[in-house]
Amino acid sequence: LHKELMSYLWKTVAELPEIQRRRFLFYFVEEMTYEQIAELDGCTKQSVKASIDIARKKVMDNLKKYLE
Image 1 (tube, helix red, strand yellow):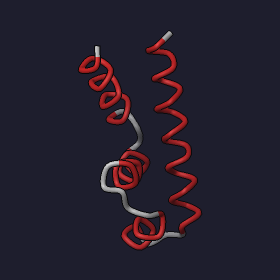
Image 2: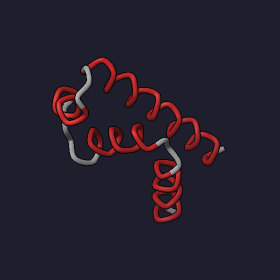
Image 3: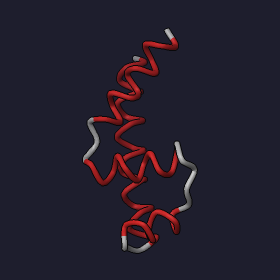
Image 4: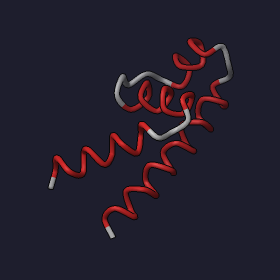
């Protein structure tokens, strides 16, 4: 079950728009801060946070559907 859930999680992340996916992975996998990601992307910390928040909601909504 764990492998199946992880596979579904990665599939969900892969389906995110490119910018959201990249920022999501930088934040949750690479453990970068909003500030570090913003510096890489040449944008504001608020823009990065908003993008990650949207991505997180999409991932969580898909996981909830999977677990139902």
